[in-house]
Image (cartoon, rainbow, N blue to C red):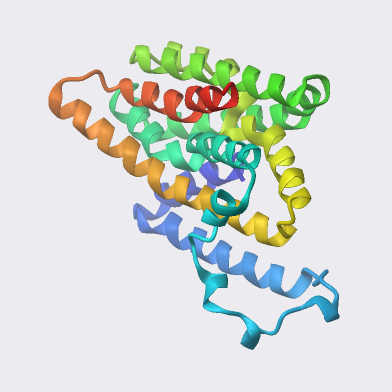
Length: 260
């Protein structure tokens, strides 16, 4: 999707001249995806273990149910889930608006240049996820993998924000790839799940709470980055400082927690 979507979006924009056309196409694709999932994906939960909708309580819909981790979980579990949640501040969707603004306003890239970059970066991400990331997970311990990817990501973002230069932006890509899209959290995420199961949390329950925390990060990060960027432009602070902030929140702060 990272490779094909920018090409399709660019074609739609070129042919229709409307900014709404890519959103309409994405909406249609999302609807088709929902229909395919509903019709083809089998239910794996045994019939006797299923809960009727009428038996659900309002607690099941509480978006802040993840606070039970901090109320009932061990200190180790709380630390793991906090680190993983902070690392999701660097997920691609959370930095997408910042990246697009940077490319247009500071790197002065055209729509075509931005599209080409996204396509090539998507290919690089796929290659990294298929080859480099599994190799690192296999050869490094969980702490070593996390530290390696966090520190590389932090260096990449500090360099990226230090200069409004396309050359600098492109030069930081190899540093950012090992931890791209919050993949720095992969090792600790697995440990957190195992720990939660050992402490009596249900697999589905803990998975839902983890996704809730990820959603909180996803709702918070773009607001934080957007307001920081706007403030920096108003007050004459270097605009690249937004990447310094991202490095601190999503890479350095998790490392502080990891070592304490």
